[in-house]
Every structure is written in C-alpha cells, then in structure tokens.
Image (cartoon, rainbow over all chains, first blue to last red; front, side):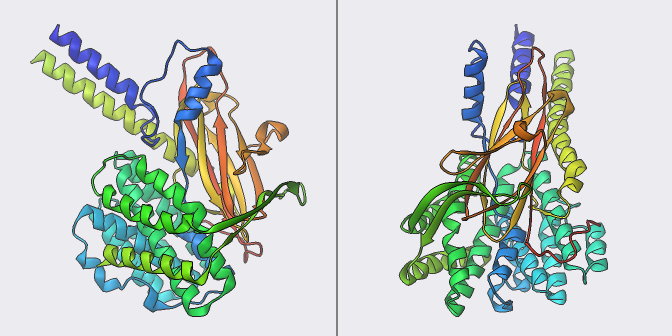
Amino acid sequence: MVNKSIVILIIAVILTSCGSDTNKNEAAAIDTTSSSANSKELMKAQQILYTLPSPVEAAALMKLSGATFDLSTLNPTANVSKYTSNESKSLNLGVYGTDLVYANIFEQTQESADYFKCANTLATALGINNAFGENTFQRVKANMQNRDSLMAIIAEASLEADAYFKENERPAASALVAVGGWIEGLYIATTIANKTKNGEIIQRVAEQKNSINNLIGLVESFGSEKGLSPVLGDLKEIKLLFDALEVKKGTTSKPVGNDRTPTIGVSKHIEMTPEQLKAISEKVGSIRNKIIK
Amino acid sequence: MNTVKKTVSLLFLLSIITLTASAQCKGLVKKNMARLAPFTHNGQLNSASLPEGGVVDFKLTCYTGLTYRLALAADPVLGKVSFRVLDEDNNEVYNSNDDNTTSWDFNVGSSQELTVEISVPLTDKSIRGCVALLVGFKQPKSVGGLRPM
C-alpha cells in the first residue's frame, strides 16, 4: 500500500510538472472529460505569459527620442560588492544589465566594459556561468566597436540568463531581474525627461503605462515566492500613478502600409501632466534607490 | 531499501524530464534565432510546453518607432502550429493561417499591448512539445543590420 501510494504520488508530480517553463498562473488541473472545444477554451484561459520590453529595446527607444548619455544616472559600478542576498543580486543583475545596454547604445566603450564586469560578477554569484562568462566577454571585447553585434551578444546573454533561471526552477529570480531592469530603465528615462523636458522622452515614460500591467502579471504569477512581495507592493504603487494617466483612444485601424510590414493596432495617445511626471519620477527614484543601496 | 531506491530513481527521472522540457525550449529558441536577422532578439525566453489542442497567449508591449518581427518556433511533433495577433481591443490583426508563414513583421501606429495567441492543432495522438515566440525589433534605419557572432 505504501509502495503504491509513493508511485501514484510521483506519477502525479510528473504529470503536473510537465510544462514547468510556463508560469504559475497555469491551472494545475484540466478537466479531461470536457469536449475538445471546451478543453481548448480552458487551456486558452489558463496559459497567459508576459513579455516585457527588454533593456535593449528600451535603450533603442530612448536614443530614437533624442536622449544623450549621462553616467551619473547609472548605478555606480562600485556598488556591485554590496549585493549579498540572492534577491538583491537578481534585482541588480537587471539594473546593471540595463546600464550595460545604455552605455553600449551611446557608444561608451569603457563604461560598457565596466558594466559588463558588474553583470558578470552578479551572474556568476547567482550560478549563471554561461550568460556573462569568459567566452561572452571575449566576444564582447572583439566587437566593442560594432554596436549592432554587441547588442546582439548582450541580447543572447540575457536569453541565457533567462533560460538558466527557468531551467533551474528559479523563475522568481528571472522575474526579479526583469523588475530590476525595468525600474532602472524607467529611472533613467524619467531623469532624462525631467532634465531635458523632451516631449518624445516624456511620451516614452507615459507609454510605460502599457508595460506595468505585464510586469505585475509576471510577478503575481509566482505567488508567494521569496523576495517578490515587497517588489510587488512597489510595482502596485507605481501602477496607481500610471492608472491616473488619461488615454485618448481613436479607432482601430486596419493594417496599412505595404504588405510586408503593415502598421497595425489601436490609435491612442497617453497624456501625462508635469505633476504626474514628477510623481512618477519620485516614486520610481525612491524604489530604485532602495534596490541599489 | 528497494522501495527507497525506486523512489530515488523515479525522482531522478522526474528531474530529468523537467530539465529536458525546459532545455528543449531553449534549444528551440537558439536554433531559430537566425530567423530574426536583421532584427535584434529581445533576450527573453518566451516559450511553453503544450499538448495537442493547447493554446498559450503571450502579452507584449510594442512601441512606435521600432519595427517588430514575431517568429513562431515549434516542436515538429506538434504538427502545424499557428499564431494570431490581437490588438488591445481584441481585434485580430494577423493570422498565420492566412498566409501560411511562421513569421511576421509589423509596426504599431501607437505604442500598445498586443496578444499573440499560439495554437497547437487537435489530433488523436497524445503528444506534448515546446512552442516559442521569438520577438525581434529594429530601428527603421538600422545601421548595417545585425551580425550575430
């Protein structure tokens, strides 16, 4: 009887663990007696995964909008030795990853190398040896003058890190890296927006209203994983401020443009007043300083 | 003692199965990365393990000023996997079944959230495999394209 119980338990664990690279808002049980159409709807309702704007994408947008490089907005490299818990390491791997991308996209060669080292230090401490390891570092050194290739290498390193966490049943760490990277990106954007009053950059800040929901969805999907509750609380405070931004929506346009690369989607504009920008900037600054201290 | 050995063996097998599924997804993404060129990959592992008839939604935010490429990769055992794209009002703006491709380039008129729904066809076989959504972007005037090293 005991033998049968153990085998049944293990088989049950095997069946429910398949698909472990999906996030935890997937329901554990699916009614197998439903009709095929109903099963499809159940499966559809149960699997929602969130993709966040990557630091590479965010930096590209900032440069497009006319931002310039300001080292003082980035997390000092000397701070890397402060991060001793896995949570602070994961968060700041995201932070330094974003700083690395910003340094690179603005062609700051020495700073790119310095931030790469910081990312490598934290990645190694977290057990991710392949993402920012020696092999990647050599490729980075060889491509220092080639921004496009360097960006591709950084993106590949990010993928390795993301995959490592998911393969090793540490998706919460992946979420913390994403949060750290997003907060740092938004901090940089709000700092530049406040200094320059550049309308395009201010609009890019406002557009993060679209991303905050996905970020919260991602973090919430991991339930009560260690280190996520305080982060979730911080994100919800930011969300409240973004919720106040008014969205002016037009009609949905049918795809226009050439057949190969149409322009799609809903037409809309997110309004943000100077007071709202100030409130968001202060909140993001406060959370970011808590992460990097 | 035999019971303990059997338990340990089964648990070891479980960990191998779990790792294999995740590693296969990463392998699938890396194998298909070249399909994004000259777009830059977003650096995220967007994948799921699905059975026959399975569906997964990926939520992503796309921004004006960048051109995007979505490329679908799927375990061949799953058959003809398809994807469609919905805007934030849930209007279908693309369906891969309409043009029989597994990748699509587009721009957005306004920055917004899109939903990419990936569907595995129903069969009478009991199967499971990895599906992955590769997301790439580029600036409209990307200098020289990307040369992954």
